[in-house]
Length: 86
Length: 106
Length: 88
Image (cartoon, rainbow over all chains, first blue to last red; front, side, top):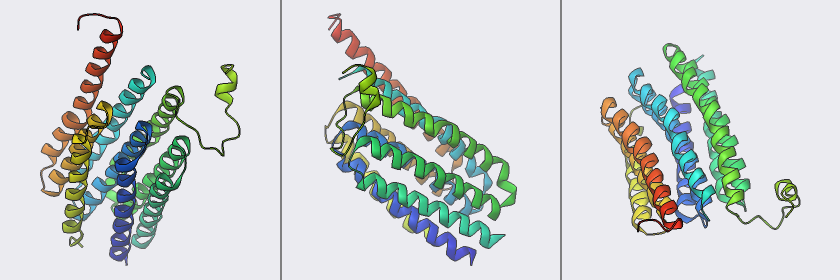
């Protein structure tokens, strides 16, 4: 039962990843692409936790921890860049 | 406990899907920021809670990841919205009020 | 349960190709830098699937965090020196 639910959740997360990737590919303005990058990073954190669960190794969660700390740095940098420009 | 954790993971994935769908369907940068950040924050937290139910040994690390996501995600959303507003992002024609423009006397 | 992992790998490879195409399409400098960071993120998940968490962590810290921040820092410095009419 839990296995079926995990499979279903992985497929749904994959579809969400593809939707955000489409917005990153086709977003008209720069800000749209930055939002899509933020969402892709968050979905990537969830994907890392999925991989850690599927492999059954808790050490993989450290990578998700590093990403949760660092993903925000890139968004802050690009927001500062967009704010001072244009 | 397994089934409860699996259901929480599926609910979190559904919120992630709603966030992605809002990112594609919304007409405006600010609406996309709303849909993309708030729904995915809730989805990630629900997924992490579900994995904590499925693997009780990982609860501390999952809690730390959820804490960082909960701290950094609304902050990046707010900074991004302010940068988009200052850079003059175009608003949807359905926008009725823009308080920040009114306060700056434009 | 691990028959999901090949499909996840295929999805990651397609997404890496898309991100690399965006990076070289020449839209604007910040988008190219962000696309390079996205390639780095997906490569990190791919290293994790290949069972090397230390390489994945290094890729996450250096490729996605430090390089993106450094590129934006340098880009801001270059633009401000252009605005000031400083050394070209």
